[in-house]
Every structure is written in structure tokens, then in C-alpha cells.
Amino acid sequence: MISLRTLGTLLLTTCLALTACSEAPKPAFLSTDVTGAPIGGPFALTDHHGKQRRLEEFKGKVVVMFFGYTHCPDVCPTTMSELKAAMAQLGDKAKQVQVLFVTVDPERDTQALLSQYVPAFHPDFLGLRGSTAEIRAVTDRFRIVFQRNGTDATNYTVDHSAGSYILDREGKLRLFVSYGAGAKVFSHDIGLLL
Image 1: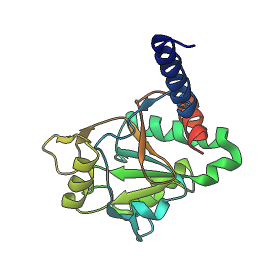
Image 2: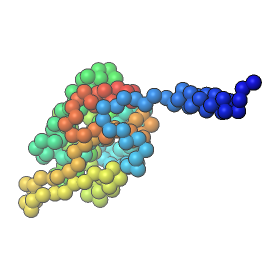
Image 3: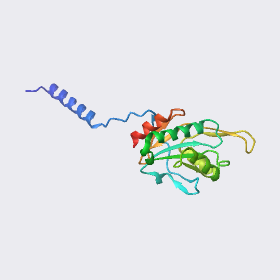
Image 4: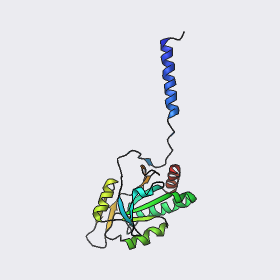
């Protein structure tokens, strides 16, 4: 006859084993997993073709969102180049990815300028813009900080958050990629989400 203590230990061990088996292993992301963070949400902005775009349009694709500006001397071209290299590393899978470059400088980043800048990195990347109020609403939702520096109306810089967000095929925010992480981090983590 099994003692009550032995039976309790056996039941506890079985429950723990079943719990461990029922949990799917988490992917080994190289960037920061922010799944469930209260960041992001729906928005509507105009792309560099003049078409209004909503975030939900891209469901079914992994979305990479980067906030920057075309006159940026370092962070923006570096990140866009890393994303270009990541698309090359993904090969045919890159067709399942949408990169969105959201300007934090809508005064200078016109549709015409974005239509030259963004596709220069990759023809499928989209530049998004809106009014200052629309941009502020999106950046607030995604916790992006930016500030214009300088008093000249045309010659100024914009300090801004430098990381990128990755959303899964369902449009849920999953990852934060720090500035300078490199193309391999993007391609690896996007590949896991695909």
C-alpha cells in the first residue's frame, strides 16, 4: 500500500512534469523580447507613394518599425543599411517582411524626399509620414522620444530613440532591437518569427 506522503510526492512530480511538457520552449531571440509590453497600437499614416497605410494592413507579415529622419547623419542610415543586409540574408523569406521607416521630422521629410530616401535602401521598404500631431500620436504610442535641436528652420538635427521594433505576423509587438545590433540579429529574430 502506498503511503499518503508517497502518493502526494508522486502527484506533485507528475504535475510538474506535465506542466514542463505543456510549455512550449521560448524562441532564442538575440534581441530583447518585449512581448506583452503596453507599447504600440494601431495607427494610420501616409506612405511615400501618397497612400494612407494602417498597421493592420500588414498582418500576415513580420513588421519592422524604425523611427528616424532623412537628414540623420548616422543612426538612421546605419539602421536602414542593417535592415537591407538582413533582407538579403533572409533571401526569399524577405517577401514576408515589411520594413516601415516612420519619420520624426515631418516638416522636412516630404513625400518626395521619403520616396527617394527609403527605397534607396530597399525597394519594398515604406517611408511613413503625417502631420506633426499624427507623428506625435504614433511616437507616444510606441514610446519613441524625439526632440528637434537648433533654431534654423532648415538646418537642424533631431535627437530620437534609436532602436527598432519587430511585430509578429499577427501585428503584436514582440521584439526591441537596440541600435547597432547588426543585420544578423535582425535576420535571425525575424527568421524565428517567420
